[in-house]
Amino acid sequence: MKHREFKDRLYEELGRVARAIDSPRRLELIDLLAQGERSVEDLAAEAMLSMANTSQHLQVLRGARLVEARKEGLRVYYRLAQAEVHGVARAVRGLAQARLAEVDHLVQTHLESRDELEPLPREELLRRIRGGRAVVIDVRPREEYRAGHIPGALSIPLGELDKRLSELPARKEIVAYCRGPYCVMAYEAVARLRARGRRARRLTDGFPEWRASGLPVQTSAQPR
View: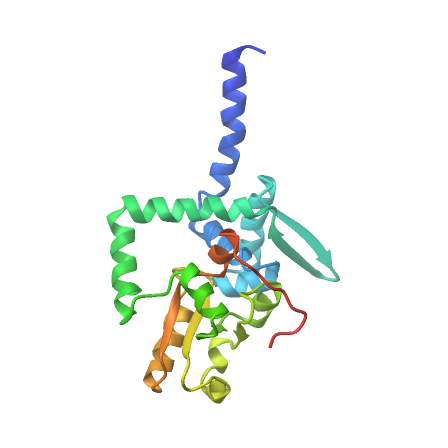
């Protein structure tokens, strides 16, 4: 094989991965799968796509070997092939926010404007957990909590927060987290808690970033 032929074939294979993630919807599906294995039905509902459209996007990702699938009864479940898949999506996100003024403007106006207090970095949250100075709540859906969560975090999906407020200590700071830096559930949880007189902040990013940084993770058969 000549060197030019080698390079052409090499970059063609690399291009398969680039083409697979060259879709806003597929990037969103990767973000969702970073929370844990999900069925096609669940992914379609979360991404507000039809089943057919969701399946087509997943097949593209599977063709590039970025996701894997298994069948259980009539349902097909997908998962990321390896953690680095979401690492690529995070790199795209970071580069876009750094280089595209439109992305930075969207984030600042839609998300950062909601923060009255500075969000809590991962390492600081870990120190507060170990020192017993914070109560951590995971406001994602239960199946995502079961697939992996910050150790000691309570599973309180956003829709249950108001009726379960009495479960949270009144004098401790509450730190909420969800799927990532663009996930609005943590912002909403903090707003609701502060409206009820609680001290609350959100984690700077989300569970996938926590796990990717090598910090401790728990899984559970049943949420707390």
